[in-house]
Length: 412
Image (cartoon, rainbow, N blue to C red):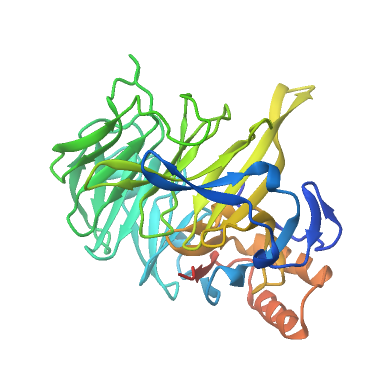
């Protein structure tokens, strides 16, 4: 079994579902029973959902089944050593599972039953090889996988059998954190980057649209001013996108917290439409990210706590993590904890890492999964039927298996 040499982006731990949370009482109620915390405002001719942060108090518990259809469990093919994967991100398609690469392993494509199909390119510095990928897209409509490498002037292109095709030249070289989306219908490509222009990064756009030949069609200037509630121009050094709806959602954010906005980018008309923001009023603004689901908006907020290590010296760790949710229709919301009620009622500690491309998805190395299931059984808070399901899964796992992928389609 290949060792896991990095901390999984999403760590699941079991928690007791009683007691109190940092943000208030931990309540056994539904989102419909929560208060209205947001209102609709017109900003730059767009209707924006704006949360009043002062109205957030209590914390509710929401099951994964509230957001998704039935959970699927897939044991990835372990018939050969070179089929094994790391605990990396996963893209779920209609017929395929694309497991993202790592520092020393390429992207790997499986079918939905877990059978290995092919490596997508290779790790290295030779032709059609890569060392670090910013973003990836599985395009089953056109039988393609697209990979956007770090600090490069092209997008790698492969078919679903692993054959490579000519690169797609980019209008500008990638620099800081970059994201992209290929429109499967007309093959136009939108490329996103942090809105910075200086001598080191002279690219004039924070978003540009091009064709497959690299010809620039249009773009939004890098001096783009975030439109939202009580906002000011600020340095943003991060991008966030999860593509959980039919809209192309994007969030520019930074380590210095200011009011930010979730946008929909209209690729055809080159418009950045604000859709979701939070008014923190006179409160200290936490570092935050926003996520869109088909029927909800989520926010992930946290602070940084300074620590002094005798060996490493001064450092910072993430502290005071809080997630809150808003219903798009009722505008009701609350802080929330997310539990996997399909699998032992274990808490999904960071919902922002498990919702992507219209699915809930997690990827677990078998030893880690066994530990999760054992803890769930020790801290038993499940029905007899669910307990049997967890026990059966646990007993079916071999420590030498390839990874297990769990996924569930988001309700629309």
